[in-house]
Length: 247
Image 1 (cartoon, one colour):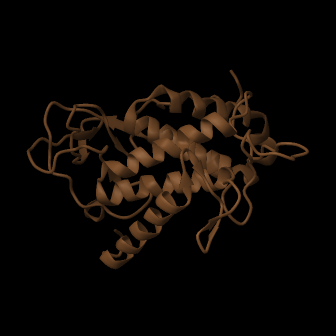
Image 2 (cartoon, rainbow, N blue to C red):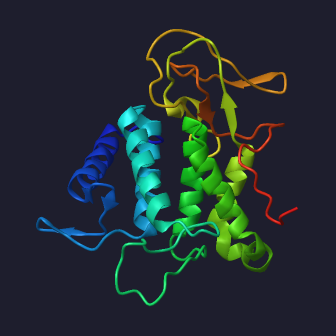
């Protein structure tokens, strides 16, 4: 969407479709595939990054199938990877022959699985209103609260998800509107506008304000649920509490 290259979008859709169709059995995503043979069950990073990929394709296409797939993988992750104290283990609860299950939020060469999943949970809650995602995100933030001051630099992706959550706004209305191209409002990560799946392709009605000044125009959802936007509002309340210090 940034470079207006339809071929790149089609390549992304094809790669995603292969993983969703050939590497997913039931609610289990697999880590590898070779010559028709599936490898080991996926780890947290696999579920988190594929769920995020689904949300980005939803943003680019508006197709409901991507929201549904993101929700399916995320719910599977909550069932099989969740730590009762908050956050997620690296491996599922049905993997055998493990000495211990590790839970880690530190970023390495790539963002941590917990960091990516924190972002996914926040976006899914804003897109669907399902409190399952809200609770899981809040528990994740709280579970790493004591680590932020000591290892904040290594927890950058979790902190980024918390900051996204603090900036996010939901917009509602009684009318529906044409969905604008993402690029119309710029390409920075904090300026994209994303309608929830199911928004109609035609009609009218736009309104999104920061205080009393109009800053963007957004489409309304077909069933009048909130649409989701990413931005920097002057005044908004965090949809998911991120009380890092527990007070």
